Length: 228
Image (cartoon, rainbow, N blue to C red; front, side, top):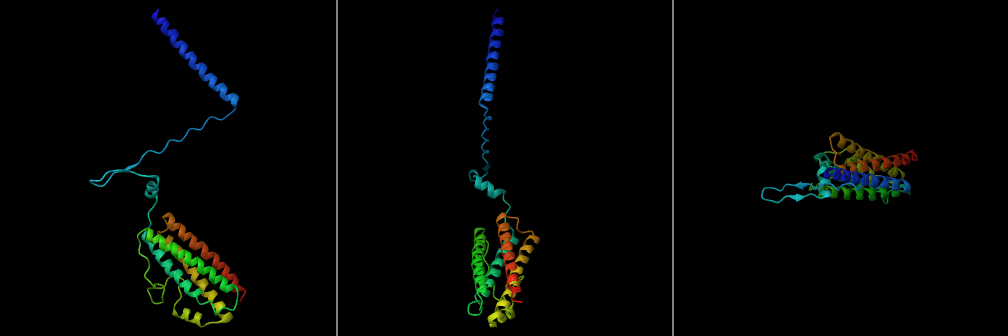
């Protein structure tokens, strides 16, 4: 008798569960609403063991991002230093425009180059500081300081530009600045050839330099063609 009661009780519980499930299904179909999306589980804690004698610590999402990102390389740091030097010489060229160019488009171009190169120099310097890397030596852009980088002008080029005036200055300025910008593009290519640019920030800087210099080279070639 007791066994029969147990069977009946189990049957009633099973029936109630089935009825409940059917009721939920019917209600869902009646509402025509998609099932609620489950909330994704939060990532588990990642604990970094401490050094001998020090406590462990739980890593934050920012800590994890830094750990997963590839570090910068010696090639990246050298690229940043050289590009600062390279951009600094471009500022020397733009400083020669005032009082020598009789046109309107050359001073406008020079101002645009001056602003962009100064901004990029500040960005490159900050990249080096954030990573504890040395900045280039003062006056490293001066002729005779180390070997010339691609596109860098020598003493003969600078003397010729400083001595030019009028339309002759405009034409020579464009020729030298095109060569200078093309040298910066070559330096970007060398960075990737040497295995640099893996760090995301270094890659972004190199791509921006390449894009900016390429756009200005095309613009200056158009300006030079009009003066042929």
